Amino acid sequence: MTTVSSRDLRNHTAEVLRRVAEGARVTITVHGEPIAEVAPVHRARPRLFNKADVLARILPRQADPGLAAQLEDLAGDTTRDLDAL
Image (cartoon, rainbow, N blue to C red; front, side, top):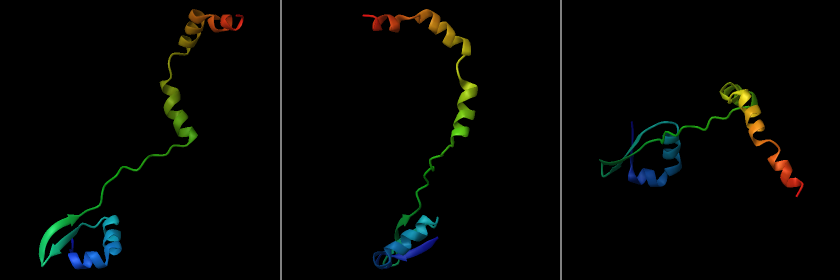
């Protein structure tokens, strides 16, 4: 763990934050006494999928193919009947 005085933190903030971003934990001191720690935030990176990955995950989990036909039979031409009005 790195130790940095409050004066060095003020004068070299960008450098200290770069070290933290790279994974270092930094202890901040005032008159030689530790008063705070600065540590990296662990964030989950968003996962990006291409089209093939999405399809590979979705297609096996789709509803029963016969369900669409049953729903069509139940609904019939109800929406088409509205067009005739």
